[in-house]
Length: 573
Image (cartoon, rainbow, N blue to C red; front, side, top):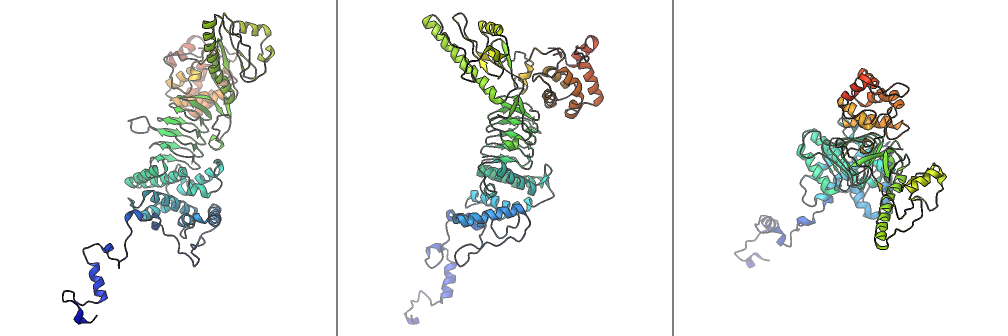
């Protein structure tokens, strides 16, 4: 317009001058249609923190080849990612921001970028810590070869952890899956970075990482906990690992596992889990106790006392039921406890004690007899009250449908008749339990478990099945005898359990240690698992065993042993 037509109240200005005045206005810029409107905070995309490569002319992101080479694990990961990118284009955005990003040249960088991306995505549009700083921390800490955890660098640990999922989890078909999706793997990676930060004095950074991992993945691991390599936390939801807890190499934890403390006590208060251990789902291991190498804990157990190496324990409180037949339960994942060699006294049927060294599966058969016989007794009681007489039942085997002959029990026919007359159950050679035929004068007896009547026996002890045995030969060593002796020498419960269970392993009777085995192996085994000096061990062996003929020591030596054991028990109980 000509200058004459411009109102005096609006001076003539150029477009540049007008734009500058608009930018300095107090009013909102977003109200002006000529200015680009900023997106609201809720629409900020987290992926912008980790920009993807520039797209080519066809709209596909340009994936650059890695600068490094010669790493088979990284090559495998990258080839799997490229295959997924080709077959499932919808995953392109995620892959190009993580594993296939141009800056990723090593396996550790791929892991760092993937986990940092997941943490930042969980933070939403308003992160507490700069995502780029989080990414740089992960990259530098996972590549650091100086600071180690349980003797392994972070880089070696994250590699072995990933391979553990591929080899143990039947649902994991590729190496790419745990890197991108498995929260158990991601939570352990976060822990390894948090632990390094804590040890370098960045306490609150470490606690922030712990908090973010707990909220994002549902796994709470204290930064000062120690975790070895090749550890798998399957499903992972609800796993808690305390400050002073340790988890050895090759161990597998299922979801809901708690490695907790003892309450308000400070200091070393959390469990120490050894190598190649399997801990089933929903298990709680509480207190500063040890779970030995190669141990196996059944699902839903509550472990309150130490578990020796190679043992299998289950229950609440957990008790030892036998030995794990495999040397690496953490890799075999026998969650049903079928691969177990039984040990100890498990069932008392009527007046007859039943001892078995079969698998845990046969124990389930015997255990099921308890409820079956109790129901049968209840029905008999009810029928007797109403009809005045009990129903006539035929003898059957719990483990099978066929009837057994007297020869199957290993007893004579007369002995079986006497047992049936007295109402006692008969144990077959194959471990099955025959139910006696009840009469109107005598009802069937239920299968009961031994009660711990001795107040000195710890009802939470994992060896309580062995502590209640009374019929120990004079030349044998029971758990109570050995425990009394070693505790008086300054040993703890874990050392007692290790010595007894190792001696029991080579003993023909799986309830107590035979005198011959004790004489041959006590000094060697106790020397490995206790801090007692060799000279003292030799003296103890001479005080606690008889001569080679199996006769128990008498006189002053026996009194000496009784005083050393605190007067609680002797070898012959």
